[in-house]
Length: 88
Figure 1: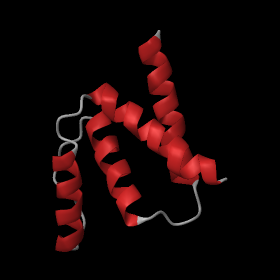
Figure 2: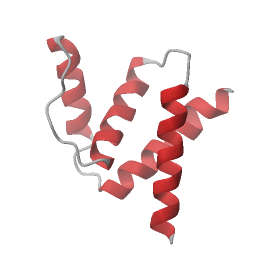
Figure 3: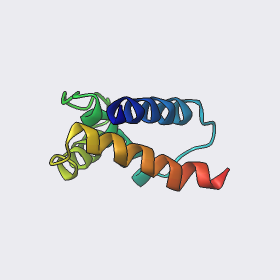
């Protein structure tokens, strides 16, 4: 099934990001954050102790709010492949 393939690609991309050892640019992290939260239907408020970071995270979620769960997964995978894996 296409949906199973997408879920597998998404999980592999998440695992890749979680095991990556170099720092990411802030804008990339915020996009990944928003796509991940939407893909996992986790719409809780950001949990940083720093209000400014919470504001940036909330803004990233607002910008991606119209994405479906599947589109968020696709965008996450695409971003990882384009911006992170290409550099290896």
